[in-house]
Length: 239
Length: 239
DNA sequence: GCAGATTTGTGCGTATGTATC
DNA sequence: TGATACATACGCACAAATCTG
Image (cartoon, rainbow over all chains, first blue to last red; front, side, top):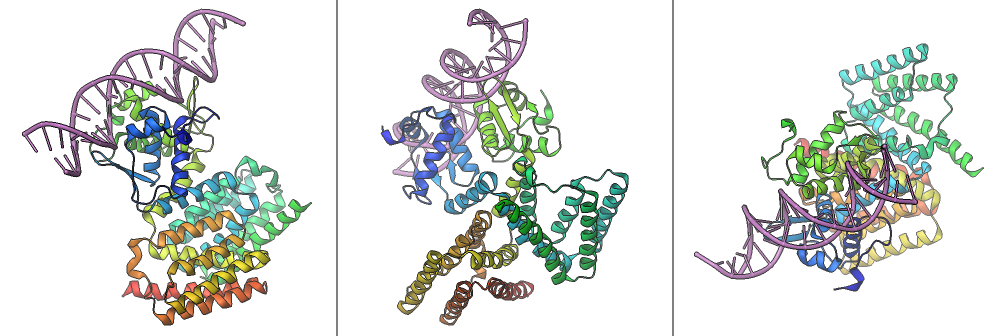
């Protein structure tokens, strides 16, 4: 009965969530190390003072997160690359809870120009068609007054796909989804018809660069574009 | 009894993992939508033909992943931002299982130069001291023949920290951890004493740029550095 | 406010398959 | 061949939160 490990409804989270925190801390502190065998479920449930069901919910989560692996008849072990999995979890936690608007746009500033660079190098005829169609659709939608910001985003997503790098394109998608969050609505551009036309114009220029395989030019163009918005935003924050 | 949902030990994964896949597919197909209430645990366990305990392991994982949220007395619901959580999961899956060596280095190529750019702009005296100490330590270690690749990595990690962007620095850490994986050992540079000295020399140049707040120069320098290695690697792969 | 129904949260007992000695 | 330890899975019971009338 290790008093330090006892958990009880202090806060409002569930028991399994508390156990997860405790186990992660044990790992971070180095008390449990990669490859280590951890105590059996019955013993753990006893020392944490909860049922085996609740404990198993925690262990299952940690297993699916790449922290632990269990083998019937053998026991439960820390994986050899716990640290890798921990870092992945921290990346996700940062994206989910800790990221500021500035950081998110800085991340776009970092990856979107390079994605366009790769896209310009690797663009296939089919992908060019996709971009052209997306742009046409946006133009028509503006005329019909049915344009949504989703259409503009589609253009960037196609560029990400054409760049043929799953890590970067998935990151861009996550960043963009995060930026749609209500936390940040205060910063949404006012979508004046003027701004819309500017966006379409931008996309036309970008598409032209990509079609001509002018990788460096499109990279610089997008960088400057996002950087302008970023600097404008930083001024607003200072006020 | 919906036959399509029945799961049985076809493969070797656990029951809860099968349920997770089924639920995620329902969401991807749009059968369940953001904010929807899903059937109760008893009912779900019945239609999936498993116990409530095993089902709960699946639900708990999905809850901690930001896909679902449960309220005692009310029920279990898809979160409003399921899609955001799904994309985060896909980013992790890509990092974990799908990423190639080329993609990982392309990602470094994309973020590390910009991190150094931010670091040069934002470097504090204390952070400069950290970098100087890290470099000194590496130099001494080379003389003593006790140098490890970890020491070289420390220098880059400090730059990441100084850049003051948690998303990018956490991503860089994850990427680097992934590159340490045994999958990629075949591509590890042969650490000749010549290569070591070159690395130290690089770091000295980088540190000098950062101290002088020459953000653009350090960015270009690192970009070219990684790009050279990337192009070399692409040639090796072609052979 | 109260009683009853519903639903998640938690606990306990037990059976089974697997690995080790 | 046991005997033991362990994870996997099931079933039942009850507590706590929530909704309805």
